[in-house]
Figure 1 (cartoon, helix red, strand yellow):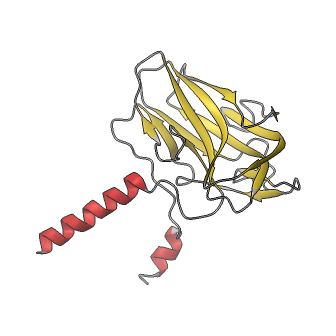
Figure 2 (spheres, helix red, strand yellow):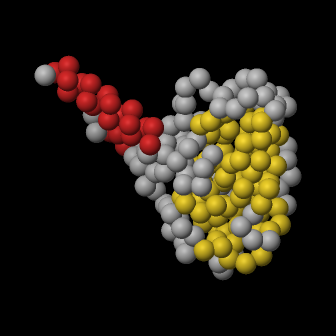
Length: 200
C-alpha cells in the first residue's frame, strides 16, 4: 500500500511538472513551441528552422501595447533567432547584446492587442545551427523599465507599465532545444521561503 501511494504521488508530481507549464499567477511571459503555451521543449536536427512564440499568459489586463523582454541562448554557438511577425505593426528598439542579454525586445505595438489566456506577443524563427542542447533563458530587457531591473514588462493601453514574471523559475531555462530530458520547471505560486516557513 505504501509503495502504491508513493508511486501515485511521484506520478502526480511528474504529470504536474510536464503539463502545468502555464502558472496561475497573472502576467507571465514565456517562450513556447506551440500557440497553446504548452510545449517548452523540442528537438531538431542541425539546419532546422523552428517556429516559436513569445507569449503572455494569464494577463490581468484586457489589452497590451507592447512588452520588454531579454533572452539568452545558453550553449548556442551559431543558432540564430529572428522575429517573423508581431500581432500588429510594431517597432522594436531593443539592441541585442545590451545589458548582458543576447537578445533584447523593447516592443511597441501600433494599436492595442487584445489579450487571451495565452496571447502571442511575437512569432520567432529559431534557426538551429548547433549540435548541442540550447537553453533559452528569459528575463528583463537591457535596459529595463522595471525599477528593480529584474522583470520583463508589459505595456498597458494607457502606456503605463505592468511588471511581468517569466513562466519558468527565474534564471532557469524557459525553453530548451535538443535537451535529452526537458528540465524546464514552471514557477510555483508560493516562493521557496514561504514553503520553507511551513516546516519551522
